[in-house]
Length: 340
Image (cartoon, rainbow, N blue to C red; front, side):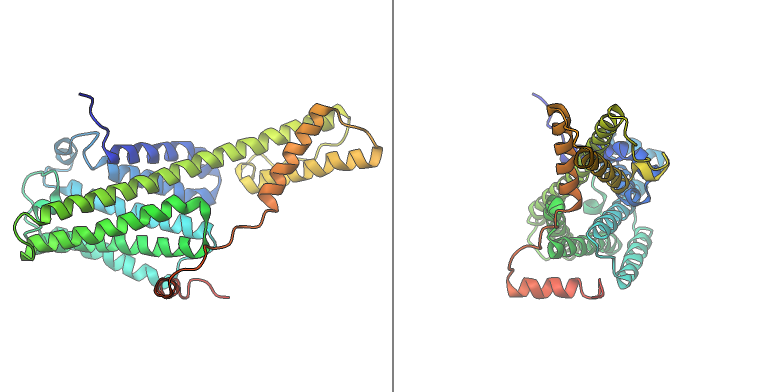
């Protein structure tokens, strides 16, 4: 019987692909570094799940006292935070400075709580196995509350702007938030015996399914965006070379390229250069009356369409009407994020 690939492994490969694809861009383009770092740190967090390398081996490298759980949770929290920063900065909503203090406090609180847990030998699910301890419950619930807060912040920003490219990220963040809330409830029932014995297990399993599914959706969105940006930049540069060959064939001046340093890998810089090349070809046609052959016309039309779509298409408006309670919540969640 064939073994089914674990969702965490799928998310790991998606983030690893995103990390590898954007290495060159991240080195040279500062705006790409947040997403790149988020992919790398998120891949580390998923590697700590033990689906690719067994957890006893990984934790043995750290001393065999479940420090792997702390490493995983810290890496996951950092990855979620980097994703939030990357996405919010791309939709032109800078993160509110006041949101940073809950982040710092959340990090410190669950890290401190970890050292008060009687940890023992390596276990597969550290949070579930130690939920009967007050320190263990605090460690898990504070970490999960931090993740849920970051995802709520992220979802509210994406929803308000209506950014279609982050639709899957929006859905994944919602699933992660639901999973965090359900996990906290399940762990609380274990710690304080709120639910009948055996009832908390299915709730916790459902929570893990929701959390893992959300992570897979978010990782997939990041990987697809990385590949789409790589493809888009490649198309722009191919169009530039195509138009430059037309200009050279007609003994016309080719617009000077930017210096082949950090700026040339920036999509906007390459797109601006393509725009100047299109103008140069069109000016030649109108000024000299020199006709283009069918192949050249197709090249110019493709380049013009590419420029028009990327430079002059208005961004889509935010989504339509929402229930009043949801509008009020979104307004409260994003209040003060951008001054008008």
